[in-house]
Length: 562
Ligand SMILES: Cc1cc2nc3c(=O)[nH]c(=O)nc-3n(C[C@H](O)[C@H](O)[C@H](O)COP(=O)(O)O)c2cc1C
Image (cartoon, rainbow, N blue to C red):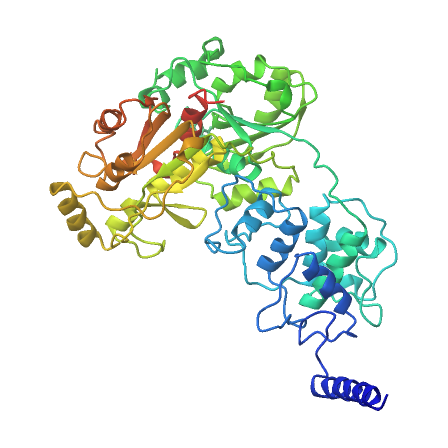
């Protein structure tokens, strides 16, 4: 009895000592900086036990720290069950990291958009109004009652107003003392945990995305309209359809300063403007609800090669958005005239761009249209896109000629020429991607690289490849990409074909070159993989890779893989 009493006293004393020595330790949360009775302790418990948020290391949660944009998209991505999407995102500040797949998903769903300078701002703190707006977008932008105003309602940005109303109406945010929302204040990690807990407690599952499908149809004689069409398609993940006259326009044909040139004759005699297209109908036309139609302005109206398409399609039930490029003329009556010609469809006002319009100008316009992007391509686990690419710089400024030759700058991101082709192919096919890289990295200094590569080639040395494709058996279709080096495959491609037996698979080569085209490399590959079925490849000059997206898309779609 005496011993029992002493034991009880001892335990009581020990508990008291622990409580005094470790006053901040909260057994509830497991974080030394989150006391069990903090207002956010429960939320932190919720967020961490549901693996939506992690601690910051050393037993800390850092409740007062900022929530970065990378953290927030990761939380939402986890909440959405970590979907894997194929979406070509081009944020220069998003490399391979713990948040990469989350950002890719968030960008594809338009839950979080990049900045107009092309970046994503991974480490930037999220403001309270942005946090709520992002949740609202995740929820597919539900309607909300304007409800009761916060005292600082006037400080809330217009883009966030509906989101804040929705969040208050649904008990996701309560506000701060004095009925303030503090829209520009940084969302602390504790606030984020709490808001996420409230959001999840509503058992909210995103409303199904309204299914929308957009097609960008265009005619372009000299490439300007094509470039704009590509920017629109990239922004909305939309399909494209290029209009090609059966008898294409040569540069002599297009020369309006020469009396009697083809365009002059057609301009002077309306009956000659009936230009036949190689194709004037689109597969799965019924699936599209929004059609962009693009053309250059010719003598103040839409270039007439689009007429054959406009006359031969039924636009009933579709929203049609014209766009054009021109040297100086505006859109003028071009859209109305096409609408009359079509006789069906809900034709919008449209937009004119200058011939050299920037991607940013186009994206800004498309964003303002508030259209839902097409769903990202379904993942296709049968297809592997594998490539070797050797960008000689990672910076778009002060490039040497050699560096410039080796890279393409897309949306501010510096990519190897062949790397860009591979990314576009992956985006369209939904395949997996494997970058062939030497185990010992190649130097990026041009002359050192050239002498090393030439040494390898003359001594027939095949460099070891870093990593491997462990599940090659799973793939039926292998795209293989490479730059042409001295009219041949780079030696590391020989390493690749030595390492993998592609018998029975379909192999599709693609390359970028400095003037020699494929230089016979598809036949070389066939020799190395005699039992593979080779399809016609695509090779693109480094001088035209910048604007080659549509060409790549057209080629892939023409391969008949699906
Ligand atoms: C036959 C012809 C007529 C043109 N007429 C006009 C015009 O009336 N106003 C104008 O601003 N630009 C005019 N242009 C310039 C084109 O509209 C402009 O270069 C356009 O961006 C070309 O687009 P594309 O590269 O997609 O063909 C004309 C060009 C051609 C070839």
